[in-house]
Length: 426
Image 1 (cartoon, helix red, strand yellow):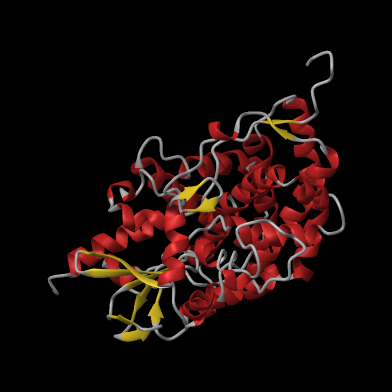
Image 2 (image 1 turned 90 degrees about the horizontal axis):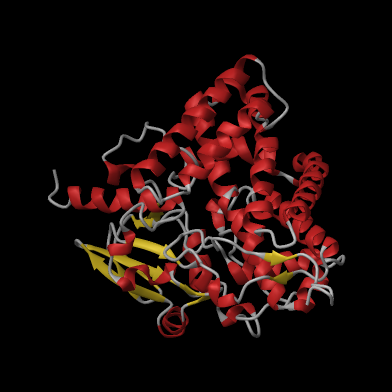
C-alpha cells in the first residue's frame, strides 16, 4: 500500500462528508482546517469575502493549501471555471478509491461518479426532468405555494419565512415528484431535518443519511410491486431491471439532497435579497419573474463550490502546474461574481444581459433538477410578492445568523412582517 493512501482516504472521507451533508461545520471537522482552506465557504452576508474577489482578479487558478501532501486548488474565474467543469477527461469525481471502496459499490447520487457509470445513471433521471415531463407538477407547485402563503398568514403577523415557507415548499414538491404516499412523508420529513441538523455532531447526521437512503430503497422495493405515479414508479415502468433498488434509492436520495436544502436556501436568501432591492421585489410580481429568478440564482449561488475533482495526471491549468491526485475545486459563488458576467456583478439587476451563470454548475455534472428548481422559485417568489407586496424584514439585518462554513449557504431564520403596522399599532 502506498504510504499516502491512509492520508488520501482521510481527505476523501472529509470531502465526501462535507459535500453529502451540506452543512460542513461540525460534520466533517472542517472548522478546524486552516482558515485559507475554508475561505471559499465564508461570506460577508450575501456576498463572497473580499479576499475571494481579490484572489479571482489576481490568480483565478490558485493553490489554496497543501494538505498532507495533496495540493488543493481553487478555480474562481468564470472562464476558467467553465473550462474545468466542462472537462470530461482530465479529472475524476469518483471518490471511492480515496475511501478504499470498490468501484462496484454504489455511493448514491451522481456527483461522485464518472462516465460511463455516471452516463448510465443520469440517463435514468434525465427524461423525468424535461420541461414536458415536469409540466404536470406546475399545478401541484402552485397549490403548495398557496397553502404555504396561507400558513404564513396563520403564523403571522411576524412568521419565520424559513420554517413556514422556504423549507416546506421544496420538501412537499420532492415528495410529489418521487411519488411518496402521504403516510410516509412525516417520517421522511424527520429524516430530512435530522440529516441537515449538526447540533448533535456528525454521528447523528450520518445516521440520518443512512436511514433516509434505506427509507428510499424500501420505497423503491414497494413500487417494484405496485409502481406509483411519481418519478420512482415511472423509472421502474420505463426501464425495470436496468436499475437496481440500491441505485434507484441512491438516485432518489441524490434528488432529495440536491433539491431540498438548496431550494430552501434560495427561497430564504432570495427573499432577503429582494427585500433589500424593492424594485426587483416588485418586478417579481410581474411577468418578468424569469429574469428575477435567473439573476437571484447567479447573485446568491447558494451551492458555493463544485464537487471536488481529482487530477488524473500531471497537467497545466491556465499556467499552473497541477500534479496527479491534486484536488481541484471550483468556487461557483466566486465565478458568478466575475466581471466576465457583465457590469456590476455584485449587485442584483434582472434587466442586465449576462452570459449563462454557473448557479446550477456546468457540463455533465450540471444539476439535473435545474428546471424543477426554476419552477418552484418562479411560483414562490411571484406568489409571495403578489400576496404580500409590502413584506418587510422584521429584525435588524445584523441579527440574522447565516450558515458559515456551509457548502449550501443559507440563513437560520428570517422573521418577516407580512403587513405594515397600522397607525394605531405604531
